[in-house]
Image (cartoon, rainbow, N blue to C red):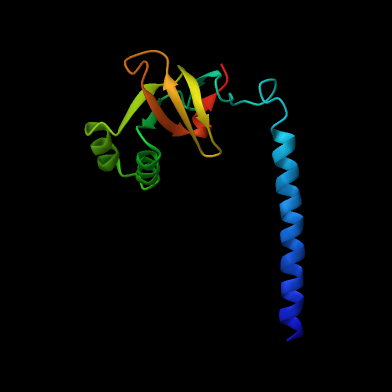
Amino acid sequence: MKQTQTANGCGIGCLAILMIVVITSFFSSNKDSSSSGSRPSIGESGVLRVSNGGDVLVAISEEALDRLTQLSVAKDGAGVGKMILDGSAWTVPSGTKCHVIDPGVFTYEVRISEGVHADEACFVASDFVKRR
């Protein structure tokens, strides 16, 4: 019985500390993000870039991006290919300019600014959206 009470007390205390850390990091990371950081904020321009310089995979919706990510992690090239063929995903060259519509922690909604897919909105993993 005492173990349960101690575990619950520690759980609440640990949760409180975690909440303080999360809130503190949230407010400190949102201070004028336009002057620092490697990712653009809402309404800013950026580029889509992968570290190896290859093409960037994007999707037409958050659901499609989730599926695309799942297939990529599973190394299911046929599944990724089918998504590209049905138009729910496509690639753009690394370095493609974009405009940020909705930045998120894991995904960004962007509008492609140049190339074959210019003026099309899409979703992309946030790691691939960089400042110019």
